[in-house]
Image (cartoon, rainbow, N blue to C red):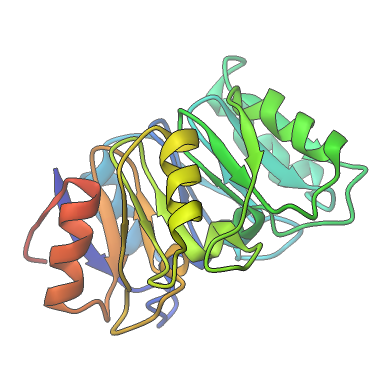
Amino acid sequence: MPIFLLDVFGSASIGVFMRVTERVVIVPNQFPESRIKRIESWFKIPVIRTNIGGSVLIGSLVCANSNGIVLPHFVRDEELSAFKALGKDINITIMEESKRTAFGNLVLSNDYGAIADPRLKRNEIKLISDTLGVEVVEGEIAGSPYVGSLAFATNRGVLAHPLLKPEEEKLLSEVLKTQVSVGTVNCGIPYVGTGLVGNSTVVVAGSLTTGPELFIIGQALKVVGENE
């Protein structure tokens, strides 16, 4: 299972701009064609191009797994239409009654479970759970509620902020049903969700990620490095 390096819009924070599941890659309309072709060759799954409320911050705004996609209330109709190509077997939910918008930062999920910001309301958590088709449990990482930016999860492993607490590690492991490790990306950034995208087949790290960081990522997510 390979791991690649990438930058987007001149930034190594690729997790801010992209969302990847086992079934789809979601990127902004403004993504360069050269990056699209590279991503298609790596993942070999459909790549959807769309913005969210005109924003390119797909990774921060969108929470998703193989079962469903959670979108903020300000997504536009023409942006939503891009998801129709996925078919009816993937749940698409717009959080119309929620003032929260950055669901990619507030929820950490894979196909086995999800950890959510404790500040989300009960009805919001239920809607996310119904959409993703998994149990959603409230939790924090390194004492912070921004679990989606503080960790990165696939079906094969979790990489979290280096200050992850033992009780948090236990919760992540139980809910996401996979091993949990700690590390950094992009030369020491502890917000690993901002610098990683991928699934159980391929993982992509921000272009500033160092060799030692790649080794830890590879061990945590069960992937191996490839030259690019």
